[in-house]
Length: 226
Image 1: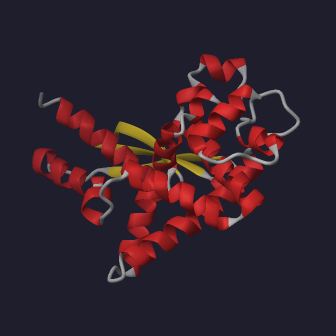
Image 2: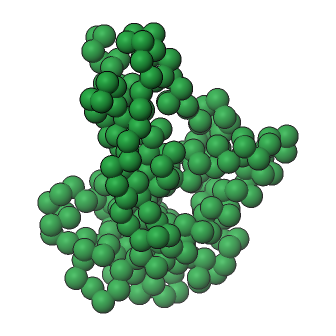
Image 3: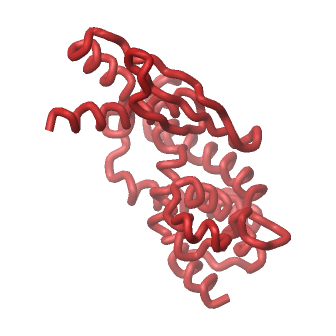
């Protein structure tokens, strides 16, 4: 219970129902009758709304496409893991020994899911406004500058320009598979040149997975120049 109190201090919110907080921090690998998957589902929807509303008000001249790109740059595993790290969630999650041995406390997927679950739990206790306050404060701390130029990087276009200039070919993307529940599907994609896999990556959508794969491929190809 002392661990939970320590986390609440960092979070800036004290739960009335401590069991709800414990549930939000419990990974499915941990031996417990409950885990954070249901709260994660709720938190995902709540954060999607909060960030969408925030961007809608912050960029009154942005069109739907631009707002969607901005939201996709913030509402994703990497983005939520970044916010989770500001709360040091990795120090407080309940995971199995196997996950512990597998560096589970630093896995972006576990951190992101736990962050969403905690936000979902706060929403259940006190509603949207308190979640909005906490989430947006973390967001603005983590991203001092929020705009299309600083957030949205089109790695696919950059990779295509590089490979066409260097090799005279365009990269292709192959879907390797998908996993996870329907509300939280994760896709794995490979980026290939001449049918050779350069990099693979996972994402919450096929487009996000392709962008991540392209980002990795760019780093690999640029490293060859060094």
